[in-house]
Length: 456
View (spheres, rainbow, N blue to C red):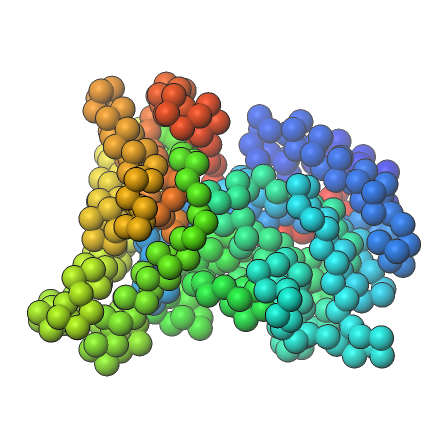
């Protein structure tokens, strides 16, 4: 469709239904305004032959969500279990296919990304480049390379994008970009045949090998899949992903994250120490990951393990096994909540779930030890946000829950509380961390997708 045709689709009743599914009924007009701007932008700002390439003028629209981790803090990299969900905050893009093998990716607030996928002789240029490490260009090249390796064509495109996924918030803004780029390539050149899991795996490979950052598969899987999912990474090459119904509003509750404003600068040693120490603990018993062991084996060798690798490696190993069990229990509580009839039954199951969320938060604080950096003990925004949240629950006699969110050490916490208490909580937390610190999250059912405006 051309720009005029797709603008009319956005303003249609079916367009409103698509936006309501992605963002909520209340956000339909804001979504329309956002997408209109993206369409106008790709036609006006990058409409030159140099930047948009030779195209057929057929506009395509894509969206990839951020994600929230519900349970399983730092378990995926050791073949553990995770609960996660895609959220309404997303990376949206209006796209034009190109015939010149170049990728031009513009995203609001970020430098333009330009990648030539083929050399002057027309041969694929898919090798990692040192100068692209840590840059979006590396992700583009890495995704194209992996798709080509898997037998798919990887051609060029121009994209005008905008992200509402808060950077540095633990909501996986980087994974959202990866699965967005992969889905664009997939739909433009492979008829959208890749599964959400394969899209996630391709994004992870690009981040690991081309971008130069080691990461697990949880972020990409949750962003690509959509909805709430339980993921078992026992088979890391092909994890088991199951959808879970999760309707907090039906039980009168809301989910939010609190941005504590902490800096992630220089925290790489803290992040990398967690999988390193967990794998050292596994290696002590002749295994490559803790998921290949059990708690009893760790406890039986605890004295020798702590002598070789220290107390923290032992504590982090214990966190892994406790957290794995909690994920199963949390999934069971959500299943019970989904089946319960009436608010009383749902509330009882939700209470069990929230108790487990609090246990997860305690374990991350006490055993995993990722609420602040031991190298910067004066910076404890996450600890303060957790303490203040618990104070709010106690003062107002609420059954709420709070836990560290994502990687930890700085950034965000996750909190659950009754819908009618959210405004007061936002004001209470805002006095310490700023008026915009609290962001309410809604779980959206769609992962990384092409939006079907062309079929309206």
